[in-house]
Length: 225
Image (cartoon, rainbow, N blue to C red; front, side):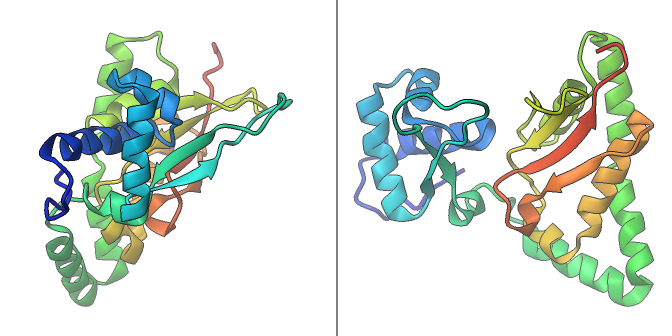
């Protein structure tokens, strides 16, 4: 990832801001304290960089969501990438991919686009089986997170605090989000592939392609879990 170097920020500052942005991308919305711990920086230094990044429109501050009872005081502010911040991580061939899919849609129709989308995620089943065989202790959501992280999705698994019987697969980045905004078949095929490897219905709760901050999918826990 390369931020615009035309700003007057020193090279060292720009490099640190790249690290801050990537940490948010890979770990989701984060507090200044969490970023400082991950990057071995002081909270004050992180806040200085965050202030600059907010002014550039790269990140935005949000009130942290609190599950369960809330303690005294205001919740900590978390920082998330904006659309402009995500743009700087996107692959440089988005336009070419979109043009190719438009041509496919014009010549082969929506069915052809869907078939392409399914072939694109054909890696999910064999990669999932390989990971589960090597690490059987992983939950389905954790194994899927490994699968998608290897493909550049910066994925993680989180336990839903109130659901009990399900986890949440979170994809902090989507390499094809711009193209998927125009061609939702890419998201549909991905959800379909997840359901097939698990042998059950899964629910996609949010997608980056449609303006959400993260792609989230509800993943039923294994019976043993």
